[in-house]
Length: 154
Image (cartoon, rainbow, N blue to C red; front, side):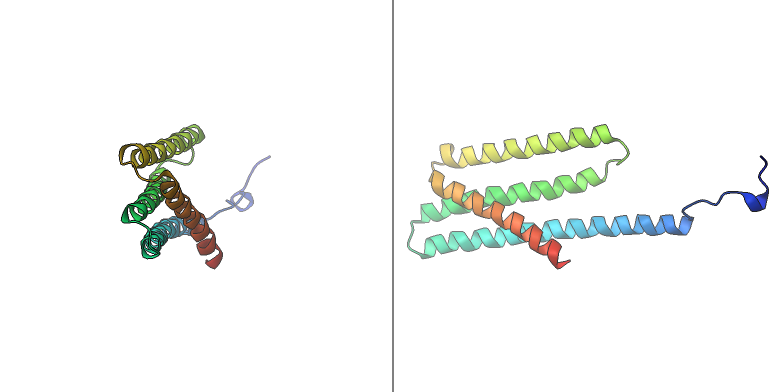
């Protein structure tokens, strides 16, 4: 079977469509980075508000500092997620094994950082464990709810 120039199969994607796909992926990456920054900002604002409320209702300053410390651990966790997401986007998506290894490494890294910082707050600084964990849980709740609400909004 011979192919004439008129019978040659056409490519399914023209360069203009490829360029549009790349632009859309770039726009999605930029929006994801902005979303991550916004979520970390909401976390920080929420944690500061809760620590201020704990101090305002008559708790001791050390209790408010414990709530703030737990919340800051959560904010650092959210910032680490945002940073690692931007770093992972720079790695080729065609290497699935590398992507999977990075996923496991980043998850283990976040877990160890959170455990170490919470242990530092409770064991070394002798802050109230319940207040530290309460601030951390509140910060994580803001992280999850802010991501959900901002995704629904967009």
